[in-house]
Length: 186
Image 1 (cartoon, rainbow, N blue to C red):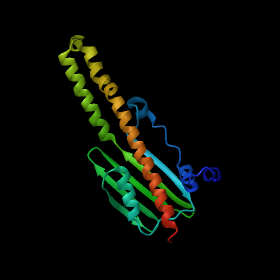
Image 2: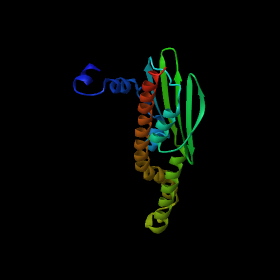
Image 3: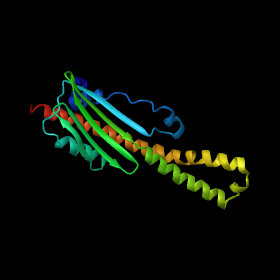
């Protein structure tokens, strides 16, 4: 933090960035599809307390995700905001403990992947019907219908996952800023 301050960076930003925990690897879904259908970013800000006013947490969540949501649960030691849309859901949860505040932001995008897979499936079906691919035999056709949509959807899914990761990271960092700013008012 001192080194950051010496070069003109905000030491509090460095402390917050260091509080973000490493993400999980993604498992089998990431290996097959190119990215997982569920993402989670977590942090633990030692010594931090939840602010009494929660509207800044709502604004930070909605701004970073680009979607309106609702507060599902809010008590003195817990805050849960959620947005649900066609194909997915995002949750922002902050829990205050005696040692500090845990922030957990998760995104479930299984429906998004299904949409991309279906689009790729339709593209493969059109290619099979309009090109010589359809005359390669039933075994190739079946394998093509099973494998090609995954291969075709993979680059689009990976790109969408990168956007989701940036949004989740932003929500966590913004929530930590709100918690830091609100802690002074207690």
